[in-house]
Image (cartoon, rainbow, N blue to C red; front, side, top):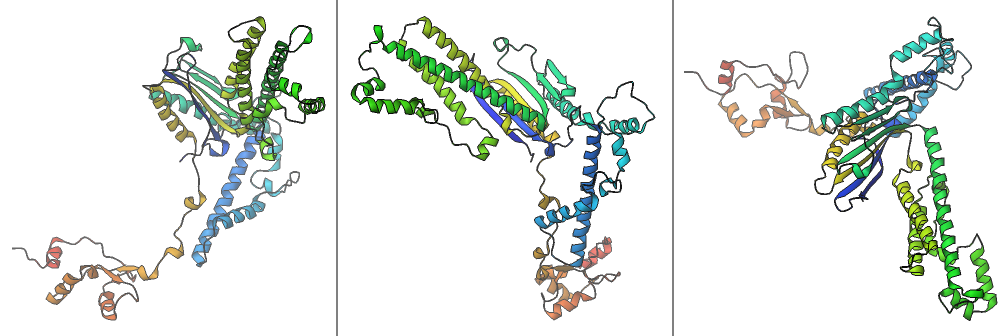
Length: 499
């Protein structure tokens, strides 16, 4: 029912206890449009807060106009509007309440609130310098009214308080709650110590942070830079290892050994012209080198360039690191010269850091809104923390996310195409008494005394019988008499007499 998206979900063995403990990472993105209480940054201007509320008010006015139009169409007997027609009508009504003329005070955009009020708070943020503060100014008065609604801090405070209260009631206590309120960033950890070697097997850490479009854009730029740095360093290690390999094949005075690999065989049996052309192709940056055939990149279209997944790059980089380790093992075996020790240390550092990097969230697939990032460790047998945190997250997301809103179901009305005239039934009150013939007729068709078919659904004789009794004192046909009957009337209807 809730409208949120899982950005990342990873289960992996713990680095220190891989057989008994599982590390779980779950990242959930709740968009701005899905939050029940909207979140704004502390540095948001008062003008933006006011315009945002004005825009919401205009949307409410448009919805009222649409509801009135729907009622008018239903009353006139015309066919109801489809979802697309409702959307088009809403777009047409935008011009009725606002326009793009910012400079004209008589513009429709200033119908609800005048231009002079908005001009007074232009550029005003959450704080005013003491030297410029005057409680009698219009600017300070407008800011005081908006601050009294607590629009700026209400959304993020609600999210943090909801999460902490659910953790308390779920008996998942925490030792650290570092709420960087003005940055809209909150860290909650079960234990104060961050050393994984000293922590128990069941633990959790939660980060609740709000990102806007500008922050996500900067996160994307940094993520691209880090990925390019990893690729560059792994390629450098690739060149060093292959240079060591080429030198190891040589003897003293530059003399070559016997055939060791394909390159040696090609140089010994193929013509020099063929080897020269092949070498030029392998050194051309626009061509794919023979030793990179296993690590080909996919073609980047407009979609891939603007929504970078880095799936191929991550797979290629991890594969290159494994390949270089195997290459060193083939070259040296169980020997450990200084060259191998240095390269092994470098590859281990790159591998560990790259695994941590790929474990993080790719900001290219984040959208402005609230990000809930949960890192937890749980025992593979008991899974106590995983089950407890599942209940916490379910309750939390249900409390802050408004869920999916389908306009077709939200404004559902019974359509005329589903109303059948031949299936209508008219209800009539029971006659006060009856003779034996009437009682015998009721026994044969007991439903006839309660409901009579509408016009065309019964014979004239049966339809005319209850016509007088089916008309209520108010003149409405088909009205049912639901007045409670006395004890004597009930006995009379059943043909019984009290002794």
